[in-house]
Length: 405
Image (cartoon, rainbow, N blue to C red; front, side, top):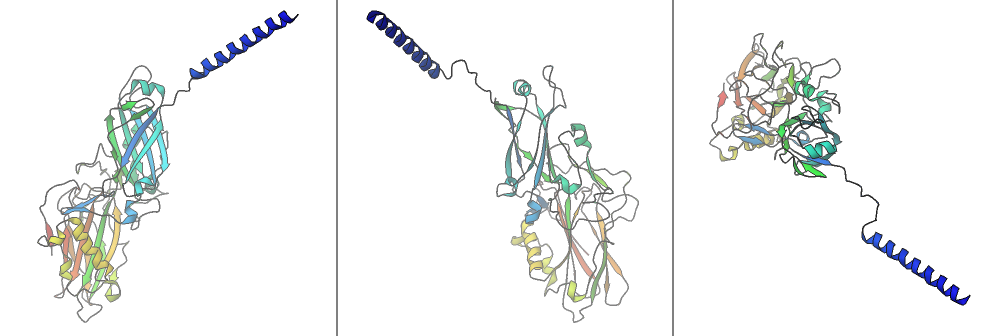
């Protein structure tokens, strides 16, 4: 009996050793037969706004926007295949979509990195893609969703409707909405870089403001007659049936905004008139007094005005110091027309007079631009007006054109 027990004990000990060895071997091989979970594929998109995120450019340089004009509150990002690959991916197929509330684009870098989950087919076949980015779309009254197809995005317009008129003809937008100014950017036919599980579009998507801004600024000398100058109305029209500011405009351009080329709808539009929307500036309470109002006209010989920002600072300082009065800011749709307008005014009890202002050439009032029209009264019954010409913000020319009446 003792011998049998010894054999049984030996056998049990051997079995335990074999089991322990098997467990140890399984652990050392990373779990034995337990399969590894494959990480889902992601596509990384980088969205940025330029150094000044709402870039403006007079012919004298880029201009720092006001803080609220910089804010990007939300982003919609769509990625579509721009070519056929294999049997499963077709040109125009939605690859991924993100809708996000953002803060990274409102910080100092104005750049954000976003990742969206994509299919394994896309990860393996890696077709080129089209990327559409809409910022602050709600402020333009646009109802964009994941299911909005590429063809609809190409055709979508900022327009007047019965329920939303954020940048329409009936109510010019003079303040930045809480949802921010509408901005957009698009890149087409972009290759895919990186490796599974993290793929990348290496070119950053630039967003620009989809509207332009105009500022009317006034001052006068102290002539002893506090009611000498009255601004009665301001219009933007050309006195003809053709349009200056269109009723509709495309949200997305055909590509990155590196030229003044626009996609503006011009058919069936009516002239844009601001006269009914402006609060007239009359008397000393509204039109500020400047000791020397001509100093606020642009002077190319002044080294402090060697950039658009320098001139903008001069105007902003004059407003802050109560030497200048401003009508606007107005955020308007861009125009392919040569913008013209009139300032109507009265000197004392005299009959209403007008003086005109004209942009340098057609298409200068493109998205992302600022136009400053400055008028001052220095006696002799005439309102002097100067207009700083606005060019595309990527323009490198340093030529200047100033209009004086």
